[in-house]
Image (cartoon, rainbow, N blue to C red; front, side, top):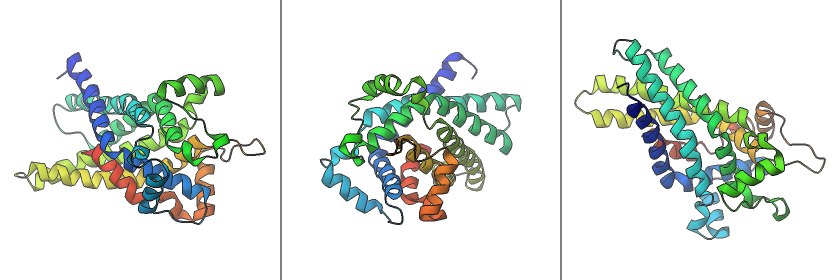
Length: 281
């Protein structure tokens, strides 16, 4: 369909699916972010998901601690996921019509994925920044905590304290991370869905599920190094000398490798895979 209603529905369905998935994966995302932050603060020390889960449960009022910043997580999905799903679906529909109704070529799927990830993340960077800061705030010394009380409070204070561009701090890593994630997620899912569907024509549900599993694993593996660097850059504060710990995304990745080896770029991969999976399905 080419009606405005259909196009808007693609955006709305994307946002709704993201919000529903986030309700279930927020605790996993909290654990993932804490693993990344703790690994950066304690070079050479390994933090497993069970250990971090116990730390959050013990120190942050049980289950409530896992949903810290849930309003910012919903805000992020309402902005970022709405944009990237809507852009991907509408752009895919447009190219499919150009193809005379035939399935998209692999390169066309890649283009749609990269465009949706890049444009969606530009819109969603402020929401992503607020989410990371609210999730990581309790790991900072008390005198360094920002203590945002809500998304609205953060949206008001960041421009006031850091300038309007402060809302896009870490924007470069966020865009790169989103493009790699979408490339792995959407392109792999659409390609696997077609191939599994052709191999199992009588088991559509199973073919979609398998496609989701493969796409989620590929997306997580491709994007985690950039997600790791993004998290560290959005959470960072000036040191005693007034300088920021990282100059840019590749500086953050280089220092991670120097501290923890190449494997440090993929710290928390199993947790990240579980966190990504519901968003693919």
